[in-house]
Length: 97
Image (cartoon, rainbow, N blue to C red; front, top):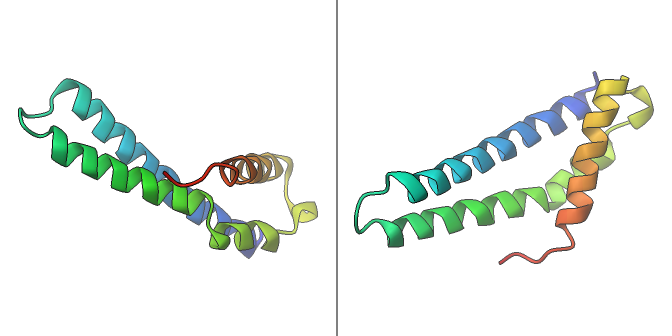
C-alpha cells in the first residue's frame, strides 16, 4: 500500500464515521427522541449532513484521489479507490443543501 492510498483511506474512514453518526441521529429521531427535541435534533442532523457532503466533495479529497498511483494498487485496493472516486464524481454534481 502506498502512503497516498493510506491517507485516502484514513480520510474516507473519518467521513464514513461521520455519516454513521448522522444515521444514528436519524434513527434516534425516529425512535427514542425526547419530547421537544425535534428542533435541536434537526439542526444537529443538518450540520452533520452538511459536513459529510463537504468532505465528500472537498478539494482535499480530490487531491488525495489524484495523489494515488492506481497502477500500484492491489485489486482490492483498486476497487476501494474506484468506489471512492465514483462517489466523489457523483456527489460533486449535487450542490450543498
